[in-house]
Image 1 (cartoon, rainbow, N blue to C red):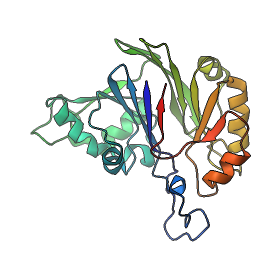
Image 2: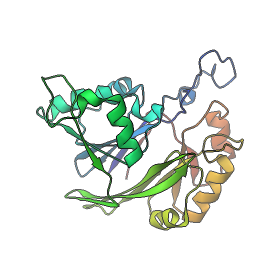
Image 3: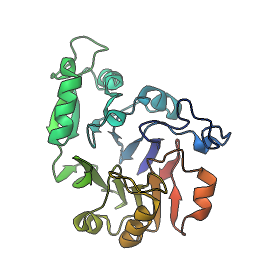
Image 4: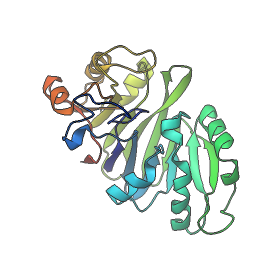
Length: 259
């Protein structure tokens, strides 16, 4: 299983508009964060999770040329605003609609923003077409399974995702954009090879876990490797990496995991 971190930043991105702080002005490429999304390749199946506003640039940067299915974790702008650029993947699927899995809230947001794309096939080549589907608790595919669980994130629920590749048995957990990880979700994540957690910043936040909260959840799950994502400009990559406990690291744009 391959996991490509297309973006690891917040809704404002890093550097932020009009900010001259040390992180926003840093020459370290690890401190340049586009909005959060990942691309998972599981036994050849390409799964795109979320569509940041920079999706097109992220895909060009990382050489992403295929998406078989798309999962929207929730309908906030930094995760849904790039969906129009999924149109190219419809072309690459032979003119078929791209299946979009999400929650009721997420599907409603897609319908509101992209009503012109809700159809079985693109109108013409080069147009987007999305087939909306509620994300099941267990999506059983020939290449493996994708389990979902709901994570509280302010006034909405985010889809937490647990990928298990059939051929290798490798398990990858992706819990972005959440204030806490319920006991059921902690139990689902047990035995994972890698876990990704929302770790917004050192300070408390009403709808995201801060660094200390993410560390506490990581210890509960007990994975050999945990990565923090959705990082603000209050996190300098090298300083955060040095301060985190063993087995916990900050993710960064362009990070490739081979599980």
